[in-house]
Image (cartoon, rainbow, N blue to C red; front, side):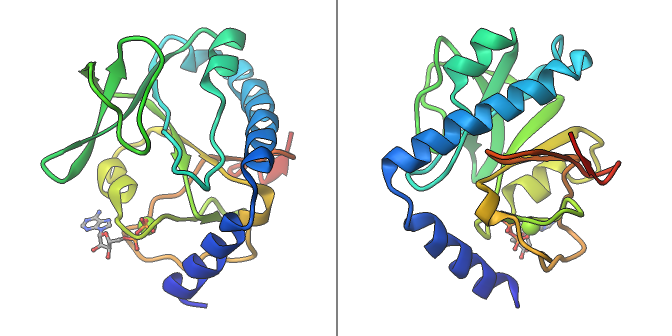
Length: 182
Ligand code: ADP
Ligand code: MG
């Protein structure tokens, strides 16, 4: 299947979820993420990147995450048509793009939203390539987050596509490099 058809297919799967289901998936996803980040103490002293979900998208519940692990998190901002990151004053507000006030930051690890992922770490985004461009040539740790129904057998990839190191769903943490769940 090509990227566009798979993207449409997965987006229609996501749009079938009720708000309550998204919220419950997001809480379970957060627990998996807390388990992963707790096992990677080297991340705790670095700025990480979160993301702000669109309506039909699972995402960490940041209040829960930050209560469990003290982290400094930046969020995407749009600057001259490209994605950069900013640290909000207080809890982040916005959908996709962080609302001011914030101050600029350069995160060193990334929570990456996706329309789909496969277990090789390949990612399908919404088709704008923001993360591919931002992360090109940088060797930062990338954690893809999604509902388990967004994990597919094979994501079609192009040369510019970035790969995840970990994939987290409401059901499991997947270590791409070790090819195992934990
Ligand atoms: P997404 O990752 O959001 O699903 P795609 O992988 O389809 O989107 O990329 C969308 C577009 O972004 C590509 O057609 C390409 O033109 C552009 N793009 C992505 N990464 C790069 C890059 N590293 N350099 C230049 N253009 C890029
Ligand atoms: Mg891509």
